[in-house]
Image (cartoon, rainbow, N blue to C red; front, side, top):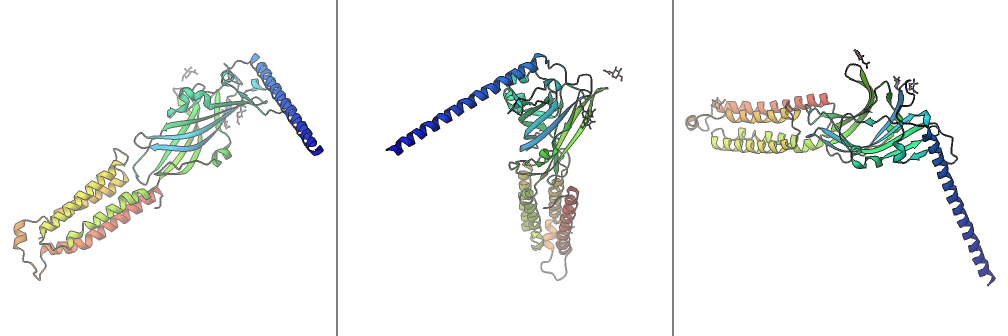
Length: 382
Ligand SMILES: *[C@@H]1O[C@H](CO)[C@@H](O)[C@H](O)[C@H]1NC(C)=O
Ligand SMILES: *[C@@H]1O[C@H](CO)[C@@H](O)[C@H](O)[C@H]1NC(C)=O
Ligand SMILES: *[C@@H]1O[C@H](CO)[C@@H](O)[C@H](O)[C@H]1NC(C)=O
Ligand SMILES: CC(=O)N[C@H]1CO[C@H](CO)[C@@H](O)[C@@H]1O
């Protein structure tokens, strides 16, 4: 009996203590919010965001950390590159410095407040589309100001940039797609961009599982000045992504079938040279199959006005087939008159004999030169 009363009493005391604690922390957080409001009021009383920090003096240093979260697509037909990026810009605006608020590392701004402070107006000069230009753009920024007056603006967006691709080495090509960023408003005498936390940039892992035909090999970061007109320069940052095409798909879809067809096309050489009809029909069938398979494979290839690496391979093949066919289109009269099973080799049999040796060895020589050359030029391995 007395134990029960004791338990009830204990429970009552515990709940009382907890509720007082919660009230205290609630009061505390309201107090902090008020303090933040007061601090912001103090800042904005004398702050006008029209002029850049350090106006008239040295350019504002904007330190940028750009991490690619994922590469969602690479389009050869549109020559563009879509990625999900996280952009963090840092700069110092001494006018925003405030006294430390205990328990708070930085103040997060609401979008109304953020509109009032100066910003470098960063944009992507080679952008095609970005989620920033859409209506929901405002919500994807997070603004923080630190007691020292440092401002951090972070943005997450889906960005599609132009990417000029060169298919001369296709399908052994490596494409370089860049993301450029700079100020849309301020010249290099006003803002100076530089790459920030390189460890964070290089250490970030990119999710590129969605790329069936490419493999990310490298990323390279640089800064440059771009000139506009005679005496205007802009500070531009560039992040290059090196994407290497995976060859295994083309090995299975193009190279192996092609090599097999070419070898099949040599079969007529082993058929009796007098059997013109059989030779021709087998040859024609193989040519038709070949051109059909080439054109269906070509549909998936990028279109370019110049000769691609793979055209050398498939084009050579067709030429070889046609020559193979023409070689023995002799006149029917001669076919009839040629003595079958004669001991002495006819001219046609001699040609066949030569061809049996020359065609395969020529073809393998071609394969050796082709793969040797292009693999060494593109620096790839199967
Ligand atoms: C910007 O960075 C450069 C080089 O690090 C430095 O010399 C310059 O003083 C910085 N400018 C400002 C306004 O802090
Ligand atoms: C811009 O920033 C870079 C990197 O901090 C620095 O090396 C360069 O001197 C700066 N340029 C100017 C004009 O301040
Ligand atoms: C730009 O350069 C031209 C001559 O090259 C000069 O006449 C002009 O005043 C310059 N403009 C500015 C804004 O410095
Ligand atoms: C185009 C060509 O070389 N045709 C050859 C076909 O085979 C006969 C065999 O007698 C040759 O004489 C032709 O030159």
